[in-house]
Length: 260
View 1 (cartoon, rainbow, N blue to C red):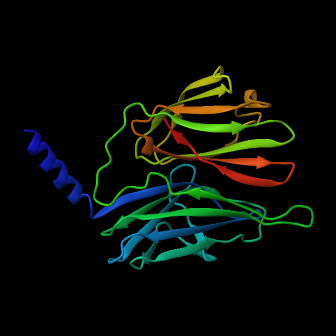
View 2 (cartoon, rainbow, N blue to C red):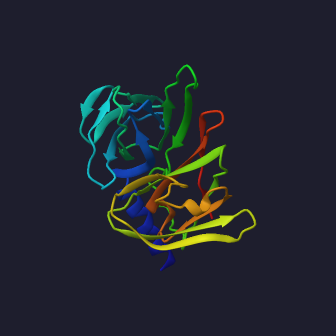
View 3 (cartoon, rainbow, N blue to C red):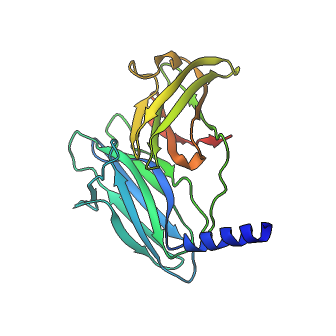
């Protein structure tokens, strides 16, 4: 029975090779001084990667984005040569608005593709330009089904000390079903600052917020600690990243989530 089960899993894995979600980018934006640069690397040394990048709005609907300055409906299709890479930009159109969302990479008949998104915020006479990176999360090895991890917990360190730092969170539901999440904010001593249960998060939905905003989680103001996210069936059910803003130096950096 064990051998039959293993053989079944192998066959299913091979069958899933044709097209699969390779990974997710928890946030993109452009405009308002920001640009987003996507870079993907084909790790297969012999076969080209036929890739599609699906862009989604906050409500999970397909997003039209200006790839290279050209209005492009989702998905954006491209090919990466063997052992090669592909880079494209969502430029700042020069307007005050900054649309945002999240993206999912789907690859057909190829080995693993990895990559990242680079945010660039333009500078001024009083503030330097700054950049930070959002990695491609949930990257899957070619033709291998990931084993689910039960009751996953995602940890995100935060620093909201007034006058210096503020933490922004971007979160996407990468599944076609609604999720019910729980957020727990703990201080550095491990004590609970606050806990918010039954947070409904629709299929393919996306959200981003500054943690200390008055309509979000102002109880974290002047606090340093960890945000715990639970409620997923698998850690890949959500794509999440945090950005740490330093208002003193007018810079930002990436805070990577930790899987517990």
